[in-house]
Length: 173
Image (cartoon, rainbow, N blue to C red; front, top):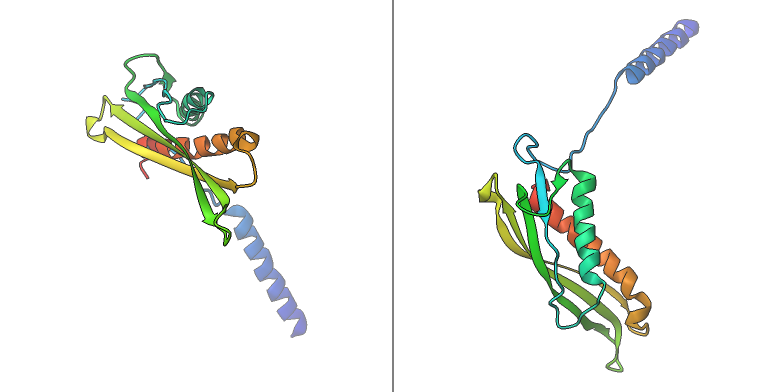
């Protein structure tokens, strides 16, 4: 009887093992909902920095990062003019604000916020056109000088903004 139970258990385990290895679970994630039969090109114009506080490399960094996400994550061809999709706009905010004020009335944290106004035009599906403002921020220790961390904070914020814009335009979340 004991030998039969062991044999039965071994058979069940072997059967489950075969089923589990024979079954293939797959999950595919397509980050865009672009109809490539109709939409083939994208134009991304330079985003000038019109913020009152100007960080000189921000305009080029933002524009190039925006172009890069569409080139890497879609099959769209980047064109200089008249793309099926078009993105343009400007950086309208680069702001510092004190946060987390301590009991001695000094801020322990400072927030850097970047705001971008975007105009999106879809020449194939004009009902998807929009003009929208996107904003992202990072906080840093107020004892640090902005110049020490400005590049890394700006890069992080730009990456977040670009993801927001990508999701709003072609990911249709």
